[in-house]
Each structure stands twice: as structure tokens, then as C-alpha cells.
Image (cartoon, rainbow, N blue to C red; front, top):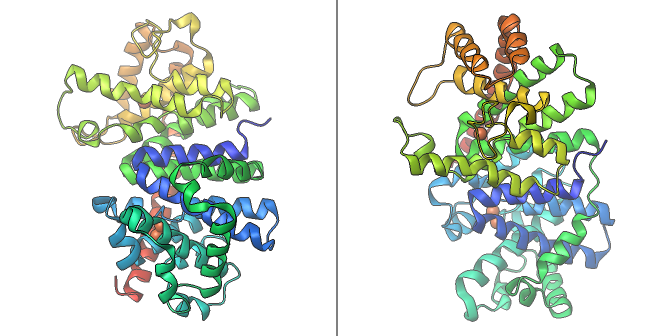
Length: 418
Ligand SMILES: [Fe+2]
Ligand SMILES: [Fe+2]
Ligand SMILES: [Fe+2]
């Protein structure tokens, strides 16, 4: 069964990263459009290959979400002067987490001077060279406004930028009016058209969606851990309830996306080591609606409905719909319990991790108030140690992956003296 189309994975990733910083993501889309038109003109790649390139070109600055967190809007600085950090982190992020490791070096090389790039042996170096041209054109046209003339790059032809690439850009701009389309947003429809050619296998779709969890970490690393814990507890409960395979899969995806909206919530509030004020609680609660808006009409409706009910409670005290126990399905109930347990067992800035006794006592009290389904709480209580052992293994794997990524980042950074 198709839970989400390849194109919608691309659109979802764009939307979620836009929630963190719209300027950077829109720059990514504009760069992808320029590169796409330039490469299409050359007829070197098939449409489906171009679609993969569009995906990576859109995400070419993904590393900046991590490395340039504190100056994310100062693009001129990290895109044109000290560009190494975000290029390296983005490359490693894509290499380890995306299903496209071959293309990931495009990110590594996207800011490299053409003279140096030429000496590198890499099949997609033309793509990296085109991204370099496209991003410089986009950044300078945005900063200089009416003063901008793309011919100004001519003096860098053959040194910093590819001369053939620049010629290709000037030719394409004359033919397709690219700069004009970038200004009036007409490029967007064309870019989304090529996304129709994205064809990811089910396995690759899963990998891209998993990668989305790690994007949560750009805002707060704890969110990655929370989501992985929730997914893992869901899987363990669902298998012990003997739910059919397709339902277990639906719960898996629902758990994966359920808190994506948290990316839009102010971190000062999320991390506040105190009781939240009523208006702050209201703000936090919008995360459900925000995720719903991004997921609806893209992901399978049943998955979205499981995900969006994760704060509902059987006594109608939950949100956003105040569903009663009759209206809460078993799949929704599994995610509700898993989400709460994940929050309790992971440490917060304002409290320690809860003990087994505390978790079980809380769940039983909630079940007595009909907030959680008794059957689900019983399954979890009966196998608590076993389930938590699995969670421990899963989260250890994640932490290990993070360590490897950070270690490699440090090693490569040292090499380039960042
Ligand atoms: Fe960049
Ligand atoms: Fe860029
Ligand atoms: Fe939530």
C-alpha cells in the first residue's frame, strides 16, 4: 500500500524545514530550479535523474540548519565566506541519513571554487558547480535588488565559478526568463512539476521519512530521542496486541510524524523549567494543527488521523477535538500511551526521567479515569522491562550514529581548519 507519494515526501520535507527557517528553504528551492533548468537544457540526465538532483539541490544547505543556527539569516557570510562548516555537515547528514549517499558529495562540493573542484574525481561535480553558480546568483540578486546584474560573475569565470556553467546560465536565463520567474514566484509550479518524476522505492521513502526525524534535532536534539522512543514503544505494544501488519505499519508512520509540528513551537517555551502560563500552553497545543496542515492530503488519511489524536484522552479532556473513548481507535490509543511514556522516561530540563514505578502508577491512574485504554496499559505493564530494553538498544544506536556523524564532522573540519 502506498502511504505517501515520492513527490509528497519532497514537499513535506520542504515544508517542515521551512518551519525552522523559511528564507533558507526558499533559497534551496530557487537554487534547485536554476540547476534543474540548466541541466535540462543539456539533456544529459533523464527526467527521473533530474528529479533526484532537484531533491539534493533543494536540500544543499541543510547543514546550515545545524552549523549556522545562530546566524541563519546571515547567508552572505556563510555562503560566500566561511562556507565549509555547513557544506561538510550537510554532506555527512545526507551521507548517513538519506537514501542518496552517491549524490551527497554534491553538498560537500557546492561551495568549492571551480579551480579546485576540477581536480576532484566525482561523477556529479558538474551538479556541484551548477549549484555554486545558482546559489551565488540567488544570494546576490536578493541582496542587491535592482542593482543586480548576473554578468558581474563573468570576472570569476574559470576561477571561482565554472565558465561553461555561467554561459549555460546566461543562455537559459535569456531563453526561459529564469530571474524574472524567480522574482515573481512563477518558478514554483515548474519546480513542483519535475517533482512528479521522483520515484523512491518503499525502502527509500522510509529512509527519507526517518531523515525527517533527524531534522527535528536541528531545533532540539531531545526531539529525535523522544520520537525514536515513541516509535519503538508503539511497535512493541502493537506487536503484543497482535495487530495486523498493515496496522502496525500505519502506527509506525503516525508515530514518526506525530510531533513534527513541534518544530514551529518556540524553544524558550518548550524548554522552560517551570509551569507554563495558559497562553503558552495554548501555543504548544498548536503543534497538532500545524502538523495536520502539512500532512493532510499528502500522507494516508488513516495515518494522519492516528498521529493527530496523540493528545486526545478517552475522558474527553484531550485536544484538539476532545474525542471520547468510543471515538478513539486502538491504533490511536497505542500512540497516546507511547507518546506519554516516551515523555516520562526521557529527561527534561525541568525534571528527571521517571522510574518504572512512577510510569506504571501514572498509566494505571489514567486508565482508571478512562483517559487511556486499559488493554493497552495492561500490555505495556506486563512487558515493561522487555519493552524498555528494546528502547534502550534503539536509542543507543541513534546516539552512536550521532557520535559517528559528529566525530567525522570534527575530523573533516580539522582538515579544512574550520
Ligand atoms: Fe551553501
Ligand atoms: Fe546555498
Ligand atoms: Fe505532541
